[in-house]
Structure formats: C-alpha cells, structure tokens
Length: 331
Length: 250
Image 1 (cartoon, rainbow over the protein chains, first blue to last red):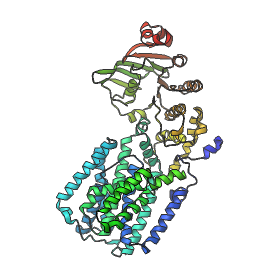
Image 2: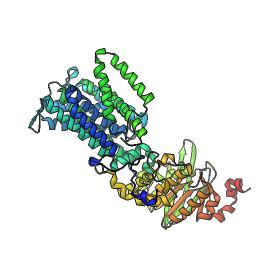
Image 3: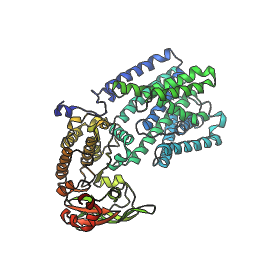
C-alpha cells in the first residue's frame, strides 16, 4: 500500500471499514439493520405482539446500558433505578395527571436523565468496582423510596395506565397500532445508537474506555465525557422503562429492583458488549428463555444462571462480539 | 520571572514520611531542551507527575508561562499547552495507529462533544496525522491496531500523539528507553526538530543522548536537586560524579 492510498483510507475502527451506507451504517451493520427491520415487520404475524414489544423495550434498555459498559467502559449495577423510575413517572403522569402518550414518555425520559445526573455526579470519579458499588447502593436507595412512598402504589404498582393515542391521531389501545409504533421506535433507537457511537463524541468515549489516563493527559475532560454518556444512557433507560409501562399499562416494584439491573447486564453480556446489535441479540435470547421456560417455575433462574456461565466461558465477548472478531468487522 | 516558561518553586511530594520530591526548584527557559537526570529513584518521574498534574502537590508552586497552574487538573494543564509522554507507553491499544494520533488532533479542533455527526468528519485530520507518523517512521503501520506494535514503535507512537497537540512545553519521560540504536538516532533527530519553537523537558538515562541534545540539565538525587547547568559543567561537579556519574564513569 502506498502512502497516497493510505491517505484515502479511513480506518476509523481497528478493522478498517468500507464505504458508508445511508443512515451512517457500515456495510455489515447496514445488512444487520435490514435484517432487524425485516424481523420487526414479519415477527408479529408469527409471535405474540405484546411479547415482542417487551423484547423491544429491553433492547432499548440494553442499548442504553451498552453505551456505558460497551463504549465507555463504565459498569453500572444501578440501571434499574432509571428504567424503573422512568416507568413509574410515565405511568403516574399518564394515569393521574392526564398526560398524553408523548408527554408521559417525555416525563419518564427526563426522570431517567435527572436521576442519571445525580448518580453520575456522585459516582463518576470512581472507577471499576467502586463505581459499580456506588451505582448499586444508589439504586437500592431508590428502590427503598419507591417501596415506601404512596405514589408508587406499593406492592400493587401504578395500574390502569391509559395508553392514549399518538399525536391524538392513532389509537394506541389497538395492539397492532402500538406494535408498529414500538417497532419504529426500536429501529430509530438503533440508528441513534449507531450515530452516537460512531461520532466524534463516540470516538472520545471509546478512547476513554481504552485508556482514560491518556485521554486525560491529552487534555480531554474525562469526567465530563463520562457524565454525558451516563446521563444519555440513563435518559434512554428511563425512556425504555416508560415505553414498557405504557405497553403493559402498569409500573411495578420489579422494574426498579435489582432484577432489572441484572437483566440489563445479562442481555448486554450475552449479546456482545460494544456492538450495536448485541443488545437485540441478547434480549431475544434472554427474554425468550424466560418466556418459554416460565412453565418450569424456579428453573428459569437456574437456566439463566447456566446460560450466563456458558456465555462467559465459551463466548467471552458475547455472541456478536465473537462474530465481530471472527469476521473482522464492527457490528 | 524573565523568560522562564516553566517554573517550579519548592515543589514537594510526600508519600507518608517519605519525600519522593523534596523542595525542588526548576527554571526552564523558553525554547531550551532541558534534561532531568539522576539515579533510579531520584524522583524524576514523580517530578514530572507533579508538573503535569498527574499527582497533587504536597507543597510548592508551579507557573506555566507566568500563570499559576498548581492544583489544576491534568486535562486543564494539557489544554494550556503542557503535554507529556509516559515512561511506560500510554497508547489506545484498540485504536489503529493512525487513530491514536488523530484522537489528539481531534481535541485540538474541539468538536468532541458532537455526537450527531459521523466520525467521518474527522477524516480530514488524516493527512496531518500521517505526516506525524511519517516523522516517526510509523507511516507503514498506520492501519494496524496499536496493541500489535513492537515496544519501540509504541514509544514512537506515543511521542507522535503528544506532538499532535503541538504543545508549547513538551515533557518526555525517557523517550529513548528500550529503543535500538537506530531508533534512538531517529528520536534524537526528531526531538531536535520539534524543539524549534517550543520548550522540551525530558527525563533521560542515556547520557550520550543528553550530552548531544540538551542545553541545560538538572540533576536529582534522593528527591533533591544536587546540581544544575550545562552538561560539561555539571559533569565535573563532584557531588554529581559521586551520586550518579560515579557509577557510570568510574
């Protein structure tokens, strides 16, 4: 290769990428996006739409989590707080304040972002295990507050959340209307995450994950970038939780408990951290296991454990992470 | 403070009862190449860490171009034009060699909070990044993952990344350590080249490099300055001969 060729070349990722496709995807990611879009269109004719929408919400939740763990290198054990409080506030504002679909969802998103800012300001200077422990502790405090305060409805949760309509035009009480909306939102989220990750900002996040000390010595305000990523992630998690509350018309303590945080970690690790489509793959695997093993009762937990151990031992980088290394492309 | 671009007064770093750096004064003149030498454990790298803000000062003050930078965070100091390289190569292992350098150039351009545009907008920095890589003999590995470089090339990459910021004061922590003779020659030429128009402070063990390259030197032993001045004068200083050169030249 001559130097002139090299100047043309754009190795923006370790594995140099080829031409850029519409929406900012590389070729490999564009193919995956088309596959995902087709799956979203075909799936409701084969599977139960409500179950599919649940998967989509968890994909969005995992995309949010992955932005932090996969691209910034921050391990949070407290994402249930953003997801759960997003769900609560969306549900509460829709049920009690008469907020429409959009306003309720926005309330959930802002709640996630605001909580994220608080968590972030407390935790961001710590790294590794300490960071994880602080986020866990804060999330447990949020859980306790939810358990005690009247607005969450305690064990009953916030029930009877009206779904409302999209822009006052499309009735979302119709499962099919809601499905197409959630499917579109999912695809939009994937486009958004791809854009953020492969932007100049995303470049800084990846550098911070690689070597935070060097990023700092080159003049980057590392804490500020981490905080930005944390708030973005929390906002998206709040949004996903709110969407779930609208679909199921309920927000409960489970959403704000460690179960939800564990789910985010599990999905992200199984799918492949630091990949755009890993959260989708991870959600499908993890939620399908839960769904189809549900008749076996407590064995769900056991099987989940086995799957998790299996993935950690055999696919250390997660399913798509391994594909990514094998095909030498970024997915 | 005349033409001192970097001036440290009485800087001290204690780790418990141990004073790694003990009331050290440094006066670095604008445009000079200044070396800090001394036996292992003399506190040279700790001194660097204090100057760049990697470590907080126990006491003392540091002025950069007449402005007090004591207690500032590392990234703020870097943005003021004082940038360093590390003794143990500090690179971005998963990035390509080119992207390592480009990442530094990106900071200078200041659009790093832009999360909406494609990273392709950074491609126009490639040409400048490649120039820097050429200077350090890394152009042929520009597309490789930085983690896969040899030890010497990682060092060179780190220097290229540091230079990409075009710092007014450049701190190099043992830039030639672990390099072969040929690479050393290249790095010495490079330092001489880049020193034009900026100030260089370096820690260096290779005395022939210091002798050929540096205007003035400061000798540290056990956390204190024991001599300073031109190499020829300092080399004759009995304290220095005893503490440091003694071992090498006896």
